[in-house]
Length: 178
Image 1: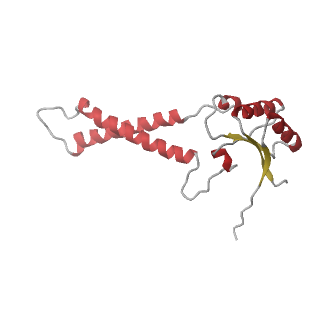
Image 2: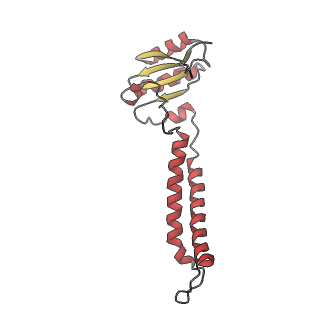
Image 3: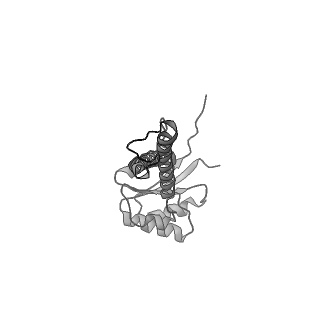
């Protein structure tokens, strides 16, 4: 098995990157991912990235927060410490709206932060997965999985033809636990 894990094509211009994606897809070469220093309009559709499911998670967290806020008020006002204040009913629904709303927002925000960290593998003590440090500064990187695509010379020539400034190979790094 080859030690090469990824083939990285480095571009200086986003238009050349998009052209490189087109050339690779026209030759049935699967692209692992693209890394850019800024958002590029239309790159998700070109790479076939599915829409995010984060709105569903936000709705679930909001539903949980609203339910917890309402249950907290219902429990405290009806069972735990019922008080008759000025002849009001034991379950004054209009008075529950502000606290229920605030609990909904709080649980949604905290849940989305936790989901963001979980989904992006941003755990404490974890080393970042960066293919090329220049992708955070001024380069546009196409990463191609070398194990899925066997003809490395063809991939390199397609990347150079599309305008790649540099093509390099990332090697697989083995960690010893001795």
